[in-house]
Amino acid sequence: MTGKEHADSVALRRGGAIPILGFGTWQIRGRLAREALNCALQTGYRHIDTATMYANEREVGRALADSGILREELFITTKLLPDSSDVRRAIETSLSDLQLDFVDLWLIHWPPRRRARSLSLFEEMLSIRDEGVARAIGVSNYSIDEIEELTVATGDIPEVNQIPWSPFLYDPAEEHELARRHIVLEGYSPLKKSQLDHPVLVDIAAAVGRTPAQVVLRWHVQHGVVVIPKSADPARIAENFDIFDFSLDTASMEQLDEIASP
Image 1 (cartoon, rainbow, N blue to C red):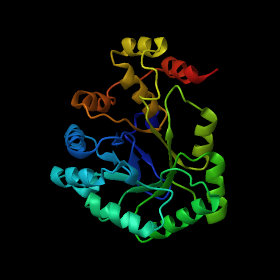
Image 2 (image 1 turned 45 degrees about the vertical axis):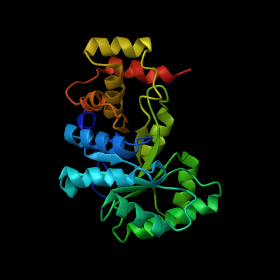
Image 3 (image 1 turned 90 degrees about the vertical axis):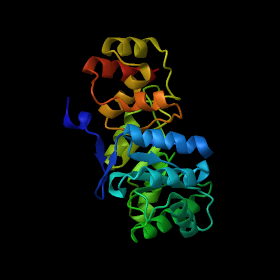
């Protein structure tokens, strides 16, 4: 095993690091969101992923404030809607709802329909980043070609691309292209996008004495891919966090890598 495979964070290009395991909050709202966040923070999660579109930033903010956890121990991500007409107002609203002075990572949630708008959003976000309101800027659901357009037009590179990712979506070429650009690959819906009863996954899980879900998450970690599973179930929240005291051997990693092969 390499140090990267055991790391609990991934370095960002401009400095700092992103915890390799995060807690996703998509489709969790209201009281359930606060309860799930409280459980996640008590379990040990310090990387929390939300978005304007999720309509739960106020609940996230309340849970963060109630937790008593020091701000420097937290890594908070939110996302900008691609049709936002006022980028500054959008981040100010997010910060107010989250009860924060800054976010650690701010993403364009998905590419706008008009390419010119994508460039405009990114440029505005970069300007706000330079004011310290967002520590890092990235994108979500962008292709390599779309990232290249942003880079050429603005002279800056997104620090993160958050995309669907799992052994069943594994694309080594995309992984390589992001790494070559020093862009952190962050995988969302890792369990939703996995076939947890797949024979290969079930066999590997049995061999290491873990659940298929834990094997999927551990596979991400050993690839150095940031992963953000989501659950509102306390038992699942704890299970998803418990992935740092075992490893997958080379043969198991290769078997998982090959699941997505035609």
